[in-house]
Length: 224
Ligand code: GRF
Image: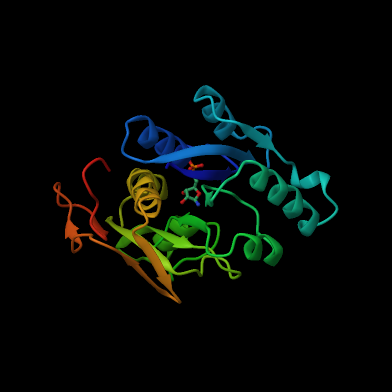
């Protein structure tokens, strides 16, 4: 049976789109039962509506505090029957109440090779720091921001002459491949978490992608 997911987004929703596309082309056995946004101008809402996915807009500014906002989100996510909460550019810090309610069932994508460059400006911070390998990380969410156990990472090289925008585009292109792939691993019951260690069953050893410019671990499968 398809894994029921709720996708939480605050902005453009290009990662949401990559998940919608993976479901539509039959690579991902999931049903997006809800797209929840905390901003009414989030383009993610348009993408969801176009795909016929139920949406909810819960404006954080209308709640007295983070707990009340999170309680409203919890109610909506539970009533959608979601089994997994997928953060895709959701720009709010979640309370322990939210994280405990969905313990082990929240994942996030971060545009850096964690544990480096946590926070809201992962790519700009990496470029500023002068590293030569950028990337992205899909991880479980725990109570500390960008800290949870790592499921998959993609390494994206860049040169010091390239702008933050160029690196951002290149990393995003890889986010759009690894996030749906991780979801498919979870949907097919192949992901187990044991503390900080995550095992994905039956995956190949990491290898350089066919165009030679990226490394993804674990290896991407056909369709991603
Ligand atoms: C991505 O860079 C993601 O890594 C980060 O937020 C951004 C969301 O982009 N968590 P989009 O809204 O999916 O286009």
